[in-house]
Length: 220
Image 1 (cartoon, helix red, strand yellow):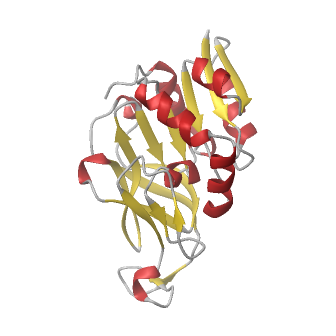
Image 2: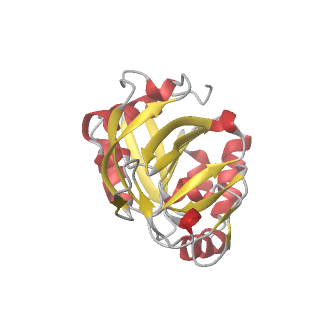
């Protein structure tokens, strides 16, 4: 049995990702929980998240999720962070003025269009782009990784976000995506793989990534 813990801190698309994982085989057991002992006893962990980062971080710290994720990574347990779960791993976020995050990965979280000072995001032709970045977009793989197995480079995944991660260590970047500018859409470090897109909403490519996660031993 492949036991997967989906961390429940009240701020995630928990049932969608749980159902997607369960659809991948009868030998997959998914538990949505905030209990540290149950999370750390699982074979692998999903760290999801949607919503405002300030609210997410408040619940993460209240429930001790920060310690759980740190312990899991220290034990080289496979962890998949999704959307705001990915952003929470960084040092800080511009959202809500300024929010201190977990600091497990070096870098910050920035808003699309924030560099212009007026919040406007433009494409290469000078046309205004909508924020949030919502819908399908290509993902360019920047490093070989077991979670890309069977997924063609430039495959399309589903995004919903107004903020993006800006890692200060380029070696962490597992994939990039273009929306007004190029941003990191996947990060990898040890037994951690983090994605800005939603694999559970990304049809064939997303399910293949989740299938790869189930088979991953936590080594790149």
